[in-house]
Length: 255
Image 1 (cartoon, one colour):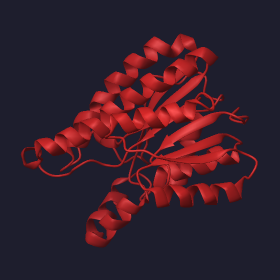
Image 2 (cartoon, one colour):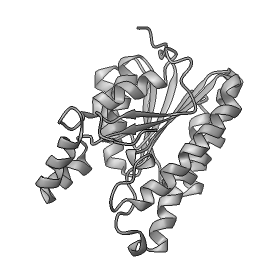
Image 3 (cartoon, helix red, strand yellow):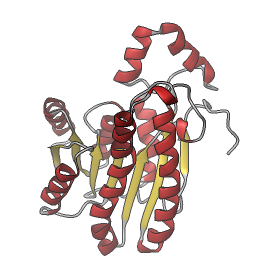
Image 4 (tube, one colour):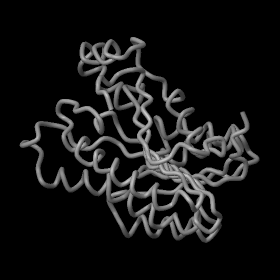
């Protein structure tokens, strides 16, 4: 299948590890230019070096980006756009504070809003003009199954990721005829560093998550990345304004 990603430019937030890095790897394999953005400079630098060895013919750059800082976001996007427009925006944000609904502080709720919802809205506003000018663009937000089915101790995630469902649906309606597709990707339990930490702290809970899936196992990040890359490619010409589950049958909700 021809994905039509050669020479496209993709910005991936949270792209230095886990699902974000797996997506970056596949974009590089397809000949896309990749910008990895993350808060940790050393991780960004390491990811860029590794990807350059995989495909030295494409442009791979790194940016330090704090999604809770509007000034930093605007500065980074301005720097990128001086060299050309962004064709593909991947919003990939780590999980927010966990705990019982009434135990999470207002600061925890604020941080969740800024990182999970407000940053997505701001990045869309900053990158869409270039996409509309080209009459081609893709915006994909990596969210969570908590957007469609409540997960204990994750009320912040559920609240703002459910809000993203409405935002994505509305935005997709407005920009679809301009050649821009907008979707959310909802991974199930995936073998990331965060889940590895959970495995060490609570092996029994980790095993129960795997058992809850229809396949009886945790996903590899590349399995999620393959879905993401298709949704952001030219091969996807009709899927927009929706939540795409890549959860191995983890959720029980009938949507």
